[in-house]
Length: 346
Ligand SMILES: Cc1ncc(C[n+]2csc(CCOP(=O)(O)OP(=O)(O)O)c2C)c(N)n1
Ligand SMILES: [Mg+2]
Image (cartoon, rainbow, N blue to C red; front, side, top):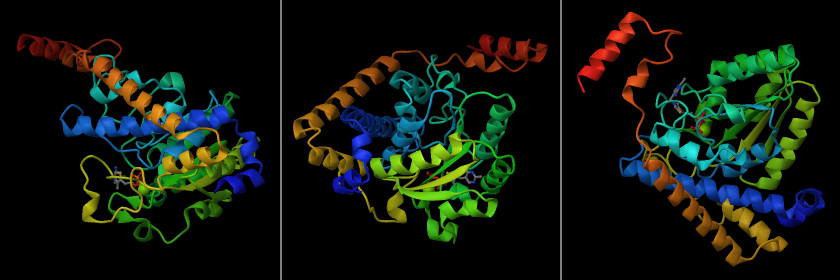
């Protein structure tokens, strides 16, 4: 969507310049962080990473329209969503580095975050496994008459799992307040969408009487518009809704993948069709910012990320003996013996 189109639809008028600039800053922060983490993985500092680049806009739109009480069942590729909902960079680095400040005590793979304070539940490795859990949480919210809804994100590949279908079916049967957002980046690792499914993803809810909508997930305005309509429906208690956000994974599936083996890049970092570049162009056209402002946002993001990572690297790693904690309410004699043996062998 270009500026004229957005203006015609009244969306630009509803979005303040401050909100647009703030969204842009988060997108740049996410992109810069992603590059930093990939470089750290290549240097052996971080074990693994699932890059976020290219998918920032839909995630930021979800973050902007989500409310504090909402529960987010996100998937592994949602770095920009974390930042938009206020998770500090320091906590993200603590998890990625598995240092002794990591809230998950080094027991999860990098990117498998869980931030209770921000209502982010734990990222699941098995594709789609979090979707029935999201529905369970929505059932709990309804049963206990709590505030908020559930927002679940996932990739296109996840829509071919049985968990996705079980989740949609139950969400509909119980009329639960769940917004399902598929970040369709066209690939499940090396498998293109055309070989995963013959259906259009936003129509997959039809079998369960769930309305669906497709948005341009690489465009902030289109994402906000589509999500707002879906959220109004869900927050009004009408039941679940499925949004398909078309997007593109710039770069590899994970740091263990080489996409050159199976595709050529359609969108690259900084190219005209890069979602961040598209937002920059929109803001320049709107006269909201000038080129020097854009350069300063990028420089500030880099400085903040470099400084935070340097600081978090000084925190010692998790003490390995903590692996015996939190298993039982009080440790069994076997655990105590194992802990002693471990300490003696130091
Ligand atoms: C049940 C299951 N099957 C296979 C895998 C291996 N796997 C990890 S990510 C992934 C691709 C998922 O693609 P998609 O849902 O489109 O998300 P994307 O990674 O593209 O963002 C696969 C097949 C897994 N983790 N879990
Ligand atoms: Mg995918």
